[in-house]
Amino acid sequence: MVAMSQLSFPRHSAKTQRFTLGAPRTFTISPDGFRVLFVRSANGTDRIGRLYQYDLRTDTEELLVDPLHLLTDGQENLSAEERARRERTREAAGGITSYSTDKRCENIAFVLSGKLYSYSINAKRVTEQASAEVVLDPQISPDGASIAYITPEGELLLT
Image (tube, rainbow, N blue to C red; front, side):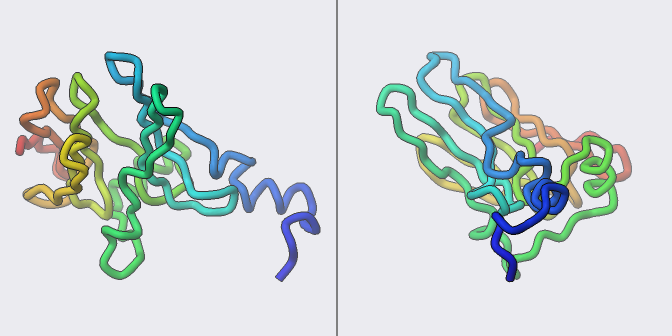
C-alpha cells in the first residue's frame, strides 16, 4: 500500500475528494447560538458522512449519529432516485449527506439506505421511522412532531 505522502497530486486529490473529506459541512446553528450541527467524515480518506454537534459553551464536539452503527451489513444501499440526487448535487460521499432539523435544533431527520431516521438531541436516541417505501428529502416540521418526505413516485407523505 502506498502512503498518502507518496501519491501524486492528482491521485491524492481524488482519494480525498478534492481535499474535502474530513472537513465539516452542511451547518445548522441552533437558535440560541450555542450549538452547531454539521456533517463530516472521520478523516481525510473516509467517505462516510456522520452527524456531529459542536457545543460552543463547552468547546466540545460530539458524534451524534454514525451510519455504520445503523447499517446492518455495513453497506449503504442507494435507490436509483438517491443515486440521481447525489449525482445532481455532485455528492460523492456516503452515509449521512443531508438532514433536516426542527426550529429549536433538537430533532433531526435524515435518510440512510432509503430508510427514514430521526435523532433526538435531548434523548440522545436514533429511531427508524415507519415509512411507506424509499424515502427522499425528509423535512421535519418546525415543532418536531412530524416529518414529510417524497417517494420515488413523487408522492408527498407525512409521518
